[in-house]
Image (cartoon, rainbow, N blue to C red):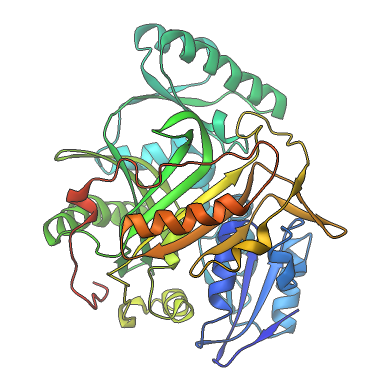
Length: 448
């Protein structure tokens, strides 16, 4: 199904139907720059996004053929696994504009070693690390430095085994063994990174980048661990919070000169230029900054919070970015808002891959809470009953003029959702550093 709107650009969003796709699609459906929107779903989607009548496809070529036949002007893809598969490379010779990386830049998502080598080659600050090709090598490192971070080189769907922050030697040894078992279960050759643990506040940078110009979006903090106070195993992302007031001028200039511009130069020198979103995961401790990771797409759920801060037409920004004309965009931010999102998660998540299905109630009650939106992810519809179909079930998002207002709205929404074993982060705002998050930017900051 296509949605006819009032603009001039026909867009297609390709995704798997997660909460990030759902929030982006919802935003595009209200965008006056866009004339029509197709959602191409690879997989079964989720019960809430399926209300918007996605078109299901199994192959890249089928999506390409449909887009050509229906004269789609712009294709957007935000999903890491689809990008790693080379989804957008399918459109290279089609004449259709693309927003997102083709296959080569997407390898940064598929290989932590490639990403780490890029950072090291550009002399960018990043934690010390050792590349390991066997469990024995990893265990030998742990014996010397039990306080470390274990990272899978390749993209693992099981989030709590992809990146493990160790707590003790025994925990590190056990975790390394579990990670090795996951490689074996998937039939993959063992390949890991053992990284020095760096303490501090984590911060996610998101940039629109057209290969030349960039625009730095406001600061957003994501919460990876399942438990309050940053405890428990890692998830794919349990919550996120963003602040429209942005960074101080001094801190913004520091980030651009010392982190962003050198990284973008390194990407260009490596032949990894693309037009889309660059994600830079940082850890900040006083005046020291280290880069933990680079992604070539926005975070989930961070992008949900960021979209609620963008006042300008998202469609126009994406289109200009795809045309290497981002500098002509005037990206206006809601500076008076704090936005956030929290996932309601299944009881087995994130430790278990297989999630026990159970019924979900209360979703319709959230519609009566002003300013609160719900985006689906691990949820299906069987007959007339909503049921769990994944670890992160639904994301509840909102905005407010203060953290207190934001928390009240989101947790009111989460309270209405009922299913067996429901858990979520109850401490949205934990660890926010006022020095970074409560400093103003000029009202209508343009790209540089």
